[in-house]
Amino acid sequence: MSYEARPGMRVEELDTPALIVDLDILERNISQMADFFAERRAALRPHIKTHKTPAIAHMQLKAGAIGITCAKVGEAEIIAEAGIRDILIANQVVGQVKIDRLTDLARHADVMVAVDDARNVTDLSQAASAKGVIVRTLIEIDIGMNRCGVPAGEPALELARCVASSPGLRLAGLMGYEGHLVLVSDYEERRREVWAALKPLTDTADLLRRHGLSVDIVSGGGTGTYDITGSCPTMTEVQAGSYVFMDTTYRAVRPEFDVSLALLTTVISRPQPAYIVTDAGLKALSKEFGLPKLANIPGADVRYLSEEHGVIDLAEPGAVDLRPGDKVSLVPSHCCTTVNLHDKLYAVRKDIVEGIWPIAARGKCQ
Ligand SMILES: Cc1ncc(COP(=O)(O)O)c(C=O)c1O
Image (cartoon, rainbow, N blue to C red; front, side):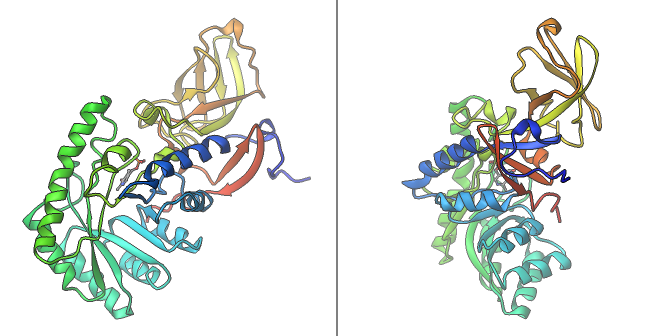
């Protein structure tokens, strides 16, 4: 007898905790985002840190995405192995081992990387030219997030000149990520602040061009800002990721995308009528953005997660007929970090499992 899940099974038959994606909603989210970019100057280069699943990356490309964004070399290796060529690592790749992996990858894929440091540029250039490969390079500018990036203006120009004169590297343009603004709750305020944050990026692109440097690509943006950043004439691509799955946090600022992701759990105990305990805790669900929510039990609230238990209070115990063995779905507060905890994604349509997809890039944080 096989314990393996297989297509054709009903969702309730799956062993738990099981990460489920509703295919109808996933497809709708992908095509809705693709439609937005269909008629724009800016294109979509979706970030796969959300799903880490080659099957979904291929769906995004088929819908019109121009390439893929990754956070790590390890993710880029998985995506290249899945036959995808145009890959941005929207991050600094630092240290000899990673630079060796990046330049090896450049033999099979058209990789692009962000830089914000002259010594890193030298290291990348030496490795790329020794192997006879070209690595496209974006100068990352800090547009207010206070994470990575050089300041806009002269420092960016100086680094861009350094890249332009480095063998093995090709200056492809600029990157600026407005991650500090993606969850601003008032839309008008978000729009105003994003436009203000993008202004130094635009000015720097102009500055580089005035000095004869090519700026073919200006990349940035996320799910919370895709339409704002994607309408800015400077931007050539947007790196939105979470829109495919959504979660309780992003849903608050992006109601136009539905939540396609849920974690199916089993009730393992109901020690008292007022609460149930499920088989999914912190090792199956992240909670840095808050506790998950119950999908369809009104008034029920997750009280806490321990490593392997979820304790859920029931507002009306008498009205809820749940006992050990019953299944309960939870909606994560942060899809990206929850997905990273799982090996498989069960792709479901109308309660029937249609596909079982390896989350091939999970855990690829190197
Ligand atoms: C560099 C970069 N680009 C884009 C994104 C956008 O992702 P999301 O659509 O999930 O907000 C992120 C999110 O972490 C990011 O770090």
